[in-house]
Length: 488
Image (tube, rainbow, N blue to C red; front, side, top):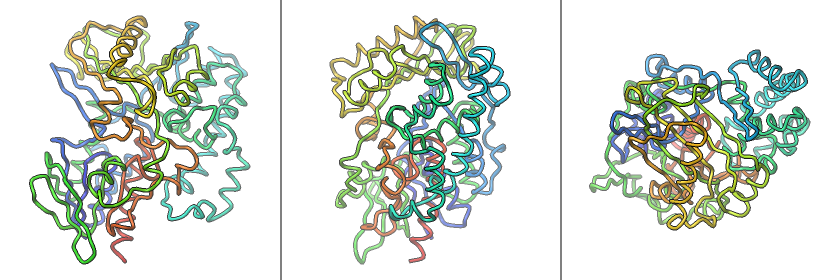
């Protein structure tokens, strides 16, 4: 089959690796000059910034994606384990380091929080592992054609109920830990799914498993090394890449071949098309004559984020880690403000990533690079970014300075929800539809469009969902779907 992949984001690249590795003719058309999509790169004045995800988990899934193209991950990307995974900082001045490896973390918790909390951690890890082993093959790493597929076979669904996976996430975490700091530390991951831990189901603790148990990794040269390596592996497997080639439309119709029309006017015939842009953008711009699914039009989208990329003179605090989570004092009320009221959190938590702690080559000598992220409402919220964006950015920068990070700026860049939308992300969020129950699995937008035979979707807006591991899995599921389309 001849497959055209529109977009060289992580999902499109994963689909390309699987399809090329299976012997299909694959042409990847990318509007930018480099691969990566949301996992992009910004280079200025000797600084190199990742512009998208900064936390890499489930390295085995990435290795499998390279293997699908007949490649060894070690020949394309060098990964180093991040330890500690996070430095968690609390308003009372205390710090907990999330250590790589269960033994090391148990020791950390025994010393900082006491033996009962260390024992709770062991029980929690056992529960997380059981959840993951049940959930991943049967509910996450699979495609759906109908909600009835959730109960086929029925036994795993029953086992999830018995495991407590449909209880509230915050309650399950609280059942293992009495220390409020640990309750925050092991439940904040629900935000990756666009949910409050007080509203999310415990099934989403699988995200906590991915970092707490499996660990966090960082590639030499930054996260952009991942899409660059996948593109290289796919090319060696026979795929063709065409960069700086915006796609204008996917042409289709009864009795006419499927074609991808470029902005230049050139048309590329295809047996199937894999579309990697944000799902609403696919319907809005690539197939505007096809009505998008109801969940795309009326669904609940995840919160967005305010990101400050800063190249600064000086070094971070001596105790700073690669990833630093600074928790606000207000916890539950902050989620209410963000998710229910649609306003900026009065006392936000934020992530400060300092990639130069592990790879000094990402900044000039004597300098550091900072990636600062604060959750904020998406464009469905009540923030007027034209009026309040500058004030919120200044507040974020002042807090970074108050925490001891260097802020003598050489070069910087700010990305807010308005900019995310300009980059093609619906509602101004890079996190797509939230993972409410009825927007997950068979209720999430399907990875194919029946009205356009041969059109397959890939990325965070379709199954299985948001996050680097999930998007890589979506590439394999898309490749499988392409082959099923081709057999009809």
